[in-house]
Length: 136
Length: 350
Image (tube, rainbow over all chains, first blue to last red; front, side):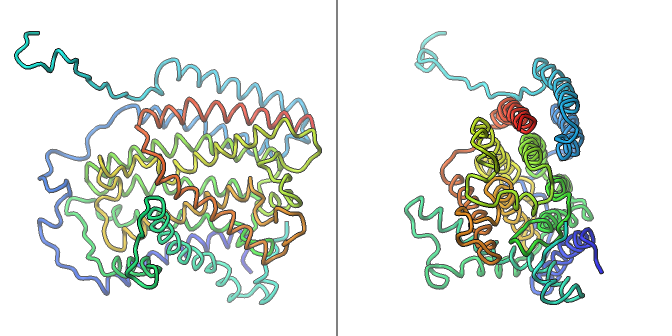
């Protein structure tokens, strides 16, 4: 009647329906008294300054690109992993060459410093700086 | 492989049986989430030498129910500046993604909702859906905390997905199948047949055991990062980002994020239990082995892992962002590749 993948689809539908039912039941019970201050953007009681949707650090894109390469690699390796025992040494050595090429790219990204994140540089004051009235 | 399912055996494959098959895991998630909320409160209290909630019911066991009732009655606030369609869609996507993964979780030898051959691959794919819902909610809130939380969260999720995927891939190499039930069947017998101890095989497998134990640790650490648990809770770091990507969410929408978080915790624990700890197999060969004992073993293994997750939350401090990226890319990723190559060499030599 329903195939195994049909069950999977039904899981998606049931998850969606559950959230819809939960939110609808809450909508019937809960109060609703919106006002301008309540609906303003929450910033710990301060008035928000400037726009939220600004440009953010390019490093996130680099990480996403590197992730994409590795993810594609995993997608290629999964079918290989199921049958590589039957394919023998030839397929095994091919896979090693594939991983080595990928690792060369990874080493390049590492060396180039794209995986470096900004470290905090704490300023540790020296004792002399703290003495009041002493000239620097 | 034929899917052995006790509900189909009892009722035949009709409409009611299918409704039961898809809704049993949902009931399990709801009961489990309430239990996990209570466990989190009580375990934290126990670790910090407090009593925890004591007023609601005997020893406070009704506390999670009180919290759900409170969340249902809470007013739902949608910020004026938010992007309304995406803001409202995000809880749907996150919970649906978390619940869909339950379709292939083998609860017992006689109960897995959908016995598809792509089981592990499917879990890996569905696990990425939560990242979409997360960045959707964070971006659509139009709040600086939410956006920063979402960006950090996605960077963290994708960084730790690679080591987790390599651990899963190594198990596929060992098992030569992606079907969760087949993987469980391979690990039957004594506990040294579990994949954490190199899977079934003769004594020559002894040199691969350090690698498989390493892979299970890598998977556990990555799964903590993927579920945003401490010590990887930077996206929700209260002291800097208020509540991360769900800062603007309130009432039932927040409850859905909460449910999804707990469901994800169980899913990663269940996968760890299935691919490394033998799933529904008894540790002692045929002793206490059977369909109902199977459910018992599976759930107790998964709950032990959930307990360790909760335990770690009250033990470890939070990582800094640069430390997080360092651990993910420069420590776990090379180690997972080495372990993967060692495991595939082991399978070729066997």
